[in-house]
Length: 462
Image (cartoon, rainbow, N blue to C red):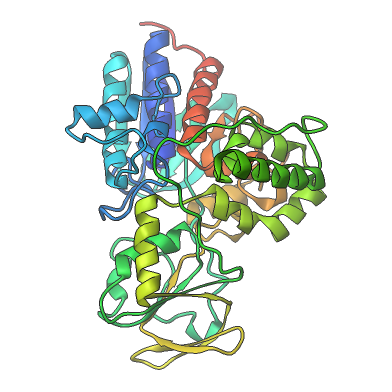
């Protein structure tokens, strides 16, 4: 290991340059500027900043799944993104669902502007992967990079976004086949799909929606499978009416009461607005509290029996995407199956796949649309394995994400949170559940930045 780069100013390393990492770096700079602290923030990611999995696409058909007026990077300025769009010649209504690449540009601009607000701060970027993290004495932590460089940090933020892909669904006979696309967001991954060949998409969530839109072509049939056969519900266009949250017998009701009350609340929404969506949206602000109040037994029951239904109504697709998907289904370009992939055979020029129920299909490629892995113990990402092996982190509740304190400080394998290692976003899903969308990530990034700077001593002035 190389000698760590030592810095005279307080040094913070953010591992991950997607939305969570970019927002965290921006917030550290803004908070340092407000406190007049001379800090150094190093953003580590092998890909260009602001992309991540969600915003790496440049396909104009891939739109945000949230209207523009809800996508501000700044908690204190809810219309910031919408104004930014107008300032950059993109005149859209506040309720429009805009291309995701625009939000990527916006994140990068927010980070650039944050640098201007912190004249005593330094932002550095390393186009590399983190490979290890070594807590040291007196709170110092060393981050080792794939380039061989080591960076000493007063605090490290793990903004990894997700933990790689889950490959357990792949049948053994095609486990090594080049026709199985395990990570569809890897650069050039979809180039392996033969032109005009039929395709099997495993999963029916938002990832499937994106890939079906991208792969749809004349003469091609796209098959999408999942155990429940449900597709994400669409958002309705326009600004929707708000609805008050339902009343429960206590701030932390059990799962049975939660399900009963929400069923009745959805019926009330239909009667009042002709639509169930306001009922689902009404508990957004209290979902973390509701999840935190469930017993472990209730959480397990929710995950096994209700989570997929919840995801289909909570994580909705844009109206434009829904219209395109409807056209694909009506034309026969997209066929959905309530089934699992139970067997497969590589025929050389194609794959023969067998679904539960006995349906056999011949396809040119099988594409993983099951979504990101959320359990560290199943992750194949070397850095995540290193964190677990070294005991820097431990899995969160139900094995989902990382265990953290209420402020996002990571709890290690011994149960200690003494090391100044923090995380946010999807890696806190086990504790918070509602922790993967921009509104939650931006709030966590702001709170985390305040905590990190408060916990890090201000360096002596020279």
